[in-house]
Length: 333
Ligand code: TRP
Image (tube, rainbow, N blue to C red; front, side, top):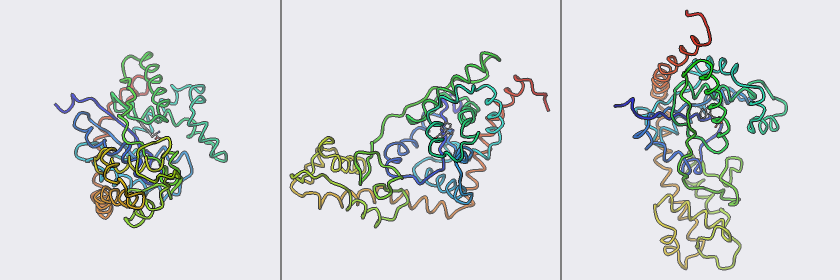
């Protein structure tokens, strides 16, 4: 009974390359969700242009990211994968919901405050009303759950408020979704600054999914270890954040426990440990990199995925949009 499954939806900004922290922390577990949920994932390209983009780069990254997600286990047969701008209902419902979202609410969004501080020369209307478009992205599909990170919780909260406000006026049009905070995966820290989460803003400490094995190995060999004198592989995130992070990564790649890892490298020091972690990461990422590269060389296939995804999404979205247009008083075509 396909349509008795709960529905889940999430948007992904095609704004950068995926890295090991994204994979081990989250994406790795997404493929398995399709067993229990009807899942929709889209490349949120309409959100990305709230910050100035180079058009050719945005196009390339949208396709690359789609390929990488598929390679990470999001099967396009089992999930609805699509590009936001291919489904015109997002923009249309976005406009309507703009008229049901308050200036004061939008002003309180911390992401707006952060992004306008970072892009002081381009504080455009889209950056400000972005949460209304995000509400539309979500509500079109009547999902039960919206899996998001901490930084997006406020936007899901706003979506709930907008849905409730609309329903209060017009009756039950929208399902009011719950934020879904996924079981935490591994928390991967940077290789050069192990006090901070791995981030593409420090590329030398960040391992990208598409990176060549020799570059990955170089980054691990140069990974910061700790300045304590014992120089042994022991888990102690407070005193030894660098080594502990490498142990976490090694554990996530090999399925070994921290105790087993301590035993494996007992008496061997960092010189043996760091390349071993590099090797384990290379082997973990190899099939993903190869599959993504293969998909990217098959543009016809990726276009087919986009087309099928957009058709399936549009079918569902149109039902909601039609109801909304009728409720607000638009004349039927
Ligand atoms: N705003 C999200 C981000 O910046 C991306 C996004 C857009 C999204 N629309 C969404 C996430 C709908 C969940 C649901 O990461």
